[in-house]
Length: 278
Image 1 (cartoon, one colour):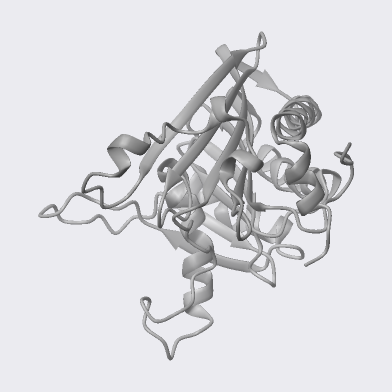
Image 2 (image 1 turned 180 degrees about the vertical axis):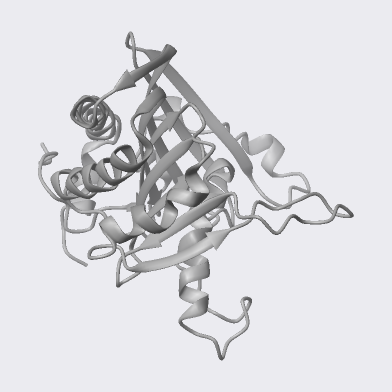
């Protein structure tokens, strides 16, 4: 039986995402300089983000979130008036992730006076690409894979697209396991805005290339591949004032749930492949 524990040499993880959502902090724009000063030793990079508007509507000039990045642009803290996100394209150990999450959270709470929390989440996205001669069924159970009907596939189908979702209510947490099968997808749609932070950061480091010419941080899924999206979330029935360590303890529990799900769902063959250096 394949070894399922420990760090995988060929891990398929491409994106780690943790979030705490809270009641809006309306003075957050004025607090940003002090918050950045508190975390700039580890996250010196900084830029402001303006939410995309609908075509034909004038786009506002006021930022709706602020991004702080490490020197390698592999970790980013994104702050909005009602959320704090810590995300990474080079996640290795949860303990290190939690340590940085705690530092960002501490800076926010110290300058805002506290957080009335609405929800906490931990999410992992893995890109699963079968080797030559293999299929997704060698890596994931058939019940998790989006429907692939051979009879329909023989017709004039331009691209196979689909998502399979299973939700577990663990009380009080929810666990969502999704398998996205969509050729060319680089990240689940609802994560595209925060993940774009890394694309923007890379673009600013290659000013001589246009956005379309610059190599993307994320590799799109091939026709044979899929994204495995494991999302553990702890909603609050009513907002609750939580201290930093309370939030971190709940994030730790959510990590345990998501990690257990990933290591339980994938097949032995998957861990045999992922456990080998490439």
